[in-house]
Amino acid sequence: MQPFSYSVAGDVRAASRLALEDPRSRYLAGGTTLVDLMKLDVEQPTQLIDISKLPLAELAILGDGGVRIGAMVRNSDLAHNEAVRTRYPVLSQAVLAGASGQVRNMATTAGNLLQRTRCSYFRDTATPCNKRDAGSGCSAIGGYNRMHAVLGTSDSCIATHPSDMAVALVALDARVRILGPGGERIMRLSELYRLPGQHPERETTLEAGDLIMAVEIPPLRFASHSLYLKVRDRASFAFALASAAVALDVVEGTVREARVALGGVGTRPWRSPEAEQALRGQPANVTSYRCAADAALAGALPRTHNAFKIELARRTLVRALLRLEGR
Ligand SMILES: Cc1cc2nc3c(=O)[nH]c(=O)nc-3n(C[C@H](O)[C@H](O)[C@H](O)COP(=O)(O)OP(=O)(O)OC[C@H]3O[C@@H](n4cnc5c(N)ncnc54)[C@H](O)[C@@H]3O)c2cc1C
Ligand code: SF4
Image (cartoon, rainbow, N blue to C red; front, side, top):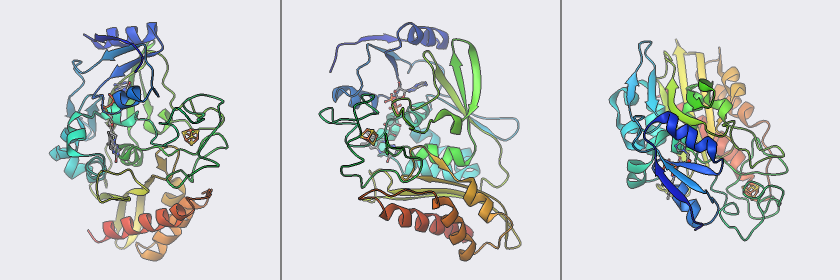
């Protein structure tokens, strides 16, 4: 591990200012992934700004029926919150599908959204990786890529985005509230994540000094009819091979509105407007769900070892929609 300085932020503006002064600093939230990466020398911050004392741990129901989740709300508290469980079951289920009880007790909302890929080459500093070391090459494209992405890839990087929570949140069209040098701003969560393109080292649209303050979920009439399904190598404590976050508004057997996002297969949490469009106005049955799944995966690009993910993701999405229909 490289030497670094450590300070505890007293208020949000001071935290943001400190980070702006030294672009190689990192905020320390739960530390469950950042410290891991520092031990591996993948992350080498010069300064850690501990934000755990900041007043960002409130989970509030908004006047319009939406929810604001503070950046420091622990994953366990989020998943077990009664309002979240009943209004947005997809979110509670997604959080509980990730990591372990112990990790979720430490891990925070913003930390979860900003966790780095689990590509094994990214975590191995002895191998080339464009995301870790810009321009060095991608070891996964010609290497062992069973866990890698089939959607949103480039010839520079095919790493998946690992967060389960983020998949549910993009399906719910969540926003992120950010404090930066220019003040506060709010953006759609889907706009936070960049596609890898030729610059996989730039993963988000955050700038130096930006601090995530909260995530806000707008009210969604049919969000209580939603579900998260995750398929993985082990029954627990494993990242997704494929996952689906779905919400359906069905009236008299016809899909009026739908939300669909996929995990484990995309370079970012993958909302699928194509699948949503394919479902709208169609009968709520397996034939429509298969058409939606085909639409969601139409642009998928397989590599040597991960072609199975295309069919797996299709089936995961169809099964998620069938399970939801049965509820
Ligand atoms: C063994 C293991 C298994 C796991 N399995 C899963 C899984 O199956 N699914 C899943 O989704 N996750 C999984 N995780 C990831 C886990 O959910 C993350 O480690 C956790 O959510 C990170 O949260 P944290 O608060 O500890 O973040 P930290 O490690 O403290 O920070 C992560 C990053 O976020 C930045 N950051 C934190 N807060 C802010 C903020 N407010 N503003 C700006 N930047 C910020 C930090 O600077 C850092 O770069 C697993 C982790 C482990 C260790
Ligand atoms: S897939 Fe991305 S993260 Fe993995 S080795 Fe290639 S460039 Fe690095």
